[in-house]
Amino acid sequence: MCISKWRAARYGIDGKMIDFGKETEVNTRALILELLDFVDDVVDDLGCREDLQYVHKILEHGTGADRQLAVYQQNNNFADVVDYITSQTLKGI
Image 1 (cartoon, one colour):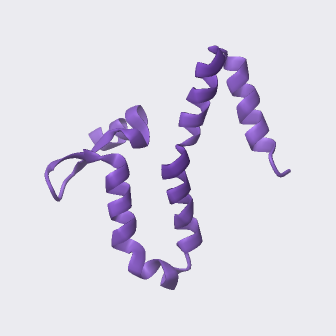
Image 2: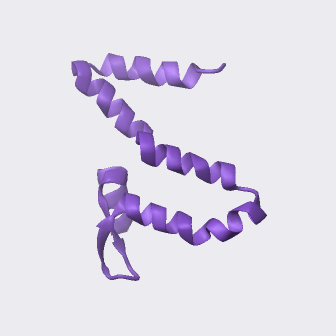
């Protein structure tokens, strides 16, 4: 597995990634925002602005893994995490 994929899996969006253009480590959130800014001038032509807005929600509220960890840390109980995942999966059905 390449180092960037490992870093993403291990540290999520709160970690650091390698910015190969700058040849240095940078905050993953900052790198994501830079990428979103880079593609912003074409997202309307591609019809994907709404999809990319979801990335902003993830940056604001964290990933699903972040939320699952928070649930676990409340009671140190994996059953609570399973209940949370189930409730989130069934939401809106």
